[in-house]
Structure formats: C-alpha cells, structure tokens
Image 1 (cartoon, rainbow, N blue to C red):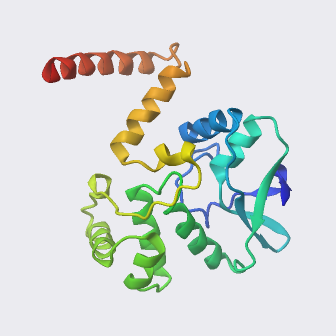
Image 2: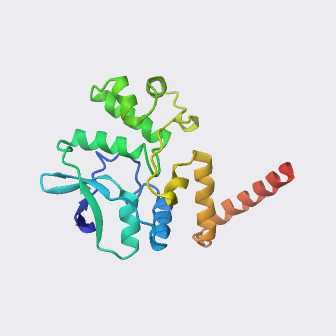
Image 3: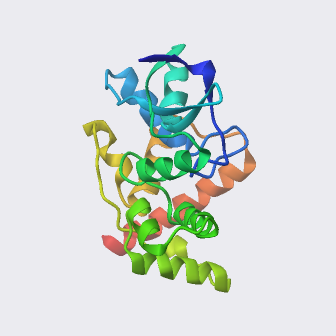
Length: 217
C-alpha cells in the first residue's frame, strides 16, 4: 500500500540505529539508495506499525530519505499487524535491521543488547533477535558493563538476506563499507572543499594512499 511520507514517524526510542541531528542514520547509504532508485531499481516496501493513530517506522528510513530525494510524496509500505506495544516495534526493528541492506554496526548491536537485558530478555532470545551467537552477545554485554568496550573491532556474524542485487554491496564488511562510502563521496563530487577540516583530511588520505601504493607495488 502507498503511504504519505509526511505521515511516517521516526520514534528514536524504538529505532535501533544511531541517528544524527537530522534523523539520518547513514546519509551515504540513503544517497546510494537514491542513485539506485533513480536508475530504476525497485526496493521492497518499508515496514510500519500503527500505534495510537501514528505510523511508526519499523524498518526503511534510508528508503524514505531516498524516496523524498526523488521528489515523491508517497512510498510503498507494509503495516505490521503484529507490532502493537512499543517493545514489539523495537524487537521487530532489530530483527529486520540485522538481516538485510545496511546491517547494524557492532556499536548499535551493543546498545541493543544493553537495552534488551534491561527489559529482562534472555541471552538466548537476544542472540536470536540480533542474529549473533549467544557467546558474542554475552561477550559484548560483559565488555560494556566492565567499561572495556571493544565492539568497534569485532565482527558480528549476521545472516544476509538481500532482496535487490543493487543492495548487496551495502551488506559488506565494515572496511569494505567504509571504502565504498569514500568512493561514492568522490564519484558524486560530494566533498565540501570549502571546509578546511575536509581539505586537511583529503591531504592525509592522499599521503596514506601514496604510502600504501608504494607498499603494494
């Protein structure tokens, strides 16, 4: 069914991704979705929950941003009848966001584990929800509570369920993902060259690439 983009509500309390001040988790992925849509790629419907008259986003924020960028006013959506209380919305959002498209980062998974444990959810249940092993879930929780968090260096084994060939690249490992972000920024001329910090970073990248090229030559 078609839903007006203006009617969709992003409730950060039930959305598992870390968003910026503009409410955008990963602008680079929204931009890639936009390019794919512009090229004719068809994406699956977003997922919504109807609670107290509001259409709460469960999955698909990047698709919403990309669709808005195309100038559309509506988007294909599925209303999930099983999502009634907000806890159901959060858990369903976690399930969906760990098996397709842009997977949750290790940091976001760690935050989810902490939140679910506070709600009394068992380690076995959490492992099933975030598609990671029980051992990984326990390790991440232990490191977080001990103040020795190293999840940014961990690889979370997740199932991949990609519905569109144009999205496969978005489910890649963290290093490949970061490199593709840089490639898109450069190809699409998205650098803010008037920003001195950006220029400084570009110079550092140039020096590192030159050094890397000499090492692998």
